[in-house]
Every structure is written in C-alpha cells, then in structure tokens.
Image (tube, rainbow, N blue to C red; front, side, top):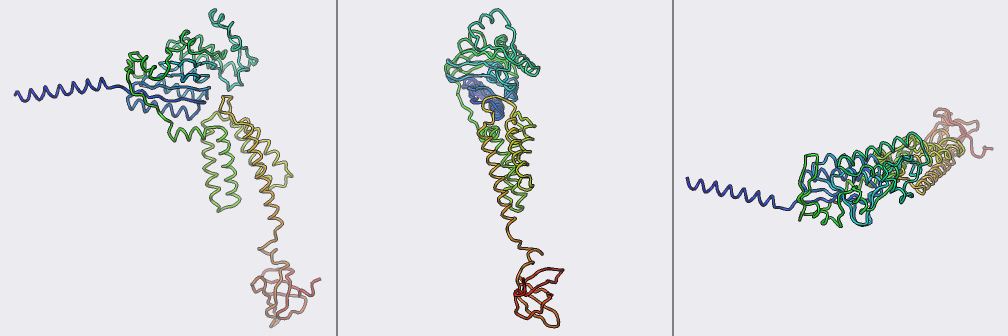
Length: 459
C-alpha cells in the first residue's frame, strides 16, 4: 500500500511542478510589420499572421505600423480580422517618424490596444477615392472644445468645394464607421469623426492626452513591459496579459505576400494585361509557336486576378482591351491609321480610368501609360511592315505560282506534249510546235493541263 501511495504522491508532485513551470514560462509576442500602402497583399499577410498566432497560442500580436493609408476593402478586411481575433492585438505606430494616416487610423481605433512611439502621428482619415481632399464636404463643429482647437488648426480643416451626394454619403459612412470603432474601445469618438470629416492629424503626445491612444512606448520591449498585467478584450473573452520578459518574434512576409504585393500593384497588373493580350495575338497569328500563347494566357489570367483584387473601373478595363484590339486590327484592315490612332486614345483613356482610387501607391503613372502606348504603336508598325513585305513577296504555291514559270519539253510523242516544270511532269498544249529539250513558259493552267509557249516565241 505504501509504495502505491508513494507513487501517487510523486506523480502529483511532478504534475504540479510541470504546471508551475509551464505557467512561469515566458509567452511569445508576435510582431507583424505593416508598412507602406495597405492593399490586398497586406490584408492577406495580416490575416494569416493572426490565424497563425491563434494556433500557436501567442500572448500578444503587435501590428507595427507605418503607412500613408490604403484601400478601403483591404483596410476593412484587416479590421474584421482584428475584431474576430481570439488573441490580444495591439497596433503600434513605430518607429519614431512613422505615421498611421488614413486607413492606418481606422486600424488603430479598431485594435484593443492602441500605442504610438514618440515622434509619430495619426489622422487624415478622410476617404480620398472620392476625388481627393478638395472634394470633402464641410462638417459642423461637434463641440465648443473642438471649436477652440480649430483656431490653431485652420490649415487642416478647410471646407470642401464639392457637395455632391456621393461624396457626402462616403464621408458620412466613413465617419460612422470610425465612430463605431471608437465607441467599441472607449476612445475619443469626436476626434475620430473630425479626422474623417476635416482630415486633421495628431502627434503622439496629443493623441495620448485626448484619449485617442492608450499609451506611448519607445520600442516593442518597452511596450511589452508597459502592457504586462493589462486586461484586454478579445473575441474569446477577457484576458490578462503576461508580456514582461516575453519572447519577441517578427513575422516576415513570405513568398505569397511578396507575390501578391507585386501583381496587385496597378502598374504591374496593367503590364501583365497588355503582355497577355499581345501574347495571345501572336499565338493566333502564328499557330503552333506555343510559347507566346502560354506566356500570354498566364500573364492575362494573373493580370485579371490582380485587377479583381483592386478597385477596378470596368469601363476603363473595357477601353484598354478595346484599344489593344483596334491597334491589332489596324494591321489587317485598310483603315489608313484611324483604327490605330483610335486604339491608342482608347488605351490611354482606359488606363487612366482603370483604378478607382487616389490612394498613394495605387495609381498608374503617366510615364507607364505613355510607354505602353508607344510600345503598342511600335508593335503595330512591326506588324504592318511584315504584312507589306509578305504582300510584295512572289507567290510560291498554287495556280498563281505556276503562271510565268519556265520548263523544258521532255516528250512530244503521239501528239501529246509533256513538259517538266518545278521538277514535275505536266501534260502541255501549245499553239506552236514543240520539240524535246525546248524551253517553254507557262501562260495558263486548266486542270492538269498547262498552256505553254516557247520562250523564243514569247513576245
């Protein structure tokens, strides 16, 4: 009996020591860099990082942010991931000199923990895909306190010039969205709405004073130290952070994120679309070459996939494809340049309309559009030159090739003349008597019979 009691006691002690050591083991903090314009690649990267953090049971996910803004759909995808996360999430604007402008401000407000490094700023959260800052409708001042603040910030709260319904709807929607995020975490909702309606910004110290953020930290270890013991609400319930002495890991973008970042740049998407179109045209013009068709099909599909992830204007896409079609058709239809010129105009206008946003980093530059247009004209000129050379080339097959060819009489026995033309024997007839070995020229072809004349009789 005593050995059994001893065994149970040792087992209980071992379990208790194991649980104690597990409880005392430092947790893991996952730092996810969010830099540059926020697009589909960034949204995919953040969502997968949150999923991985949940499966690895990390203590805290820190989105270290430095962004000028980004696409609305990508921003909302990140916010949905943050709100649905079962692990605590902190958005940290760092290092010093970084910013969380436009879409970054929304993400900061959506995070359970909002922090900034000294020398950083946030704000300017007005939607810019409705025509830029000059198209913003003016908004009434929410309170007397903010009215006093406006006196020292007149440059950032200029009344808008456009009062169209769509602009007002988008601004009101964005204001309601960020106000809801502010109320969710008990932050300054009035200033959040001003950031949308008036595009105002705040430095880190003022953001802390106005309760826009929760704390200021010099770096990630400092942030982890200050968050230790803090209660945080997650989708799985409230948690108490144990971040003091936690292991800090940085999530690096993998090949998928880098690939998405490349193809979802509007300039790359337009180039892929153009290359894909011309590759397919080359394959149709030269069946059996295979390589142009393979490259064209792959480039076209990747370009289309990238465009469906971006805020694409499909009228602009149709104009781009129509312009390319006109440029190619110019080489086959005697339109005297009208199709080619019209195609270039349609391509340029369509490329300018292609992406429906003014967000920095998501526009198609004029220089690229001009380069692609010139390349298309060179392509058109090359096709037209090749067609003209082919038209001037003598016919080498068929009935037309036989007319005018020279041959030699090989037999004229039994009233039938046989001539050798292009190494082939043909039955021949002639209005002139023919002799074996005589050189003749073909003047006509009827069925399998050639009409010939002696070369010395040709006049």
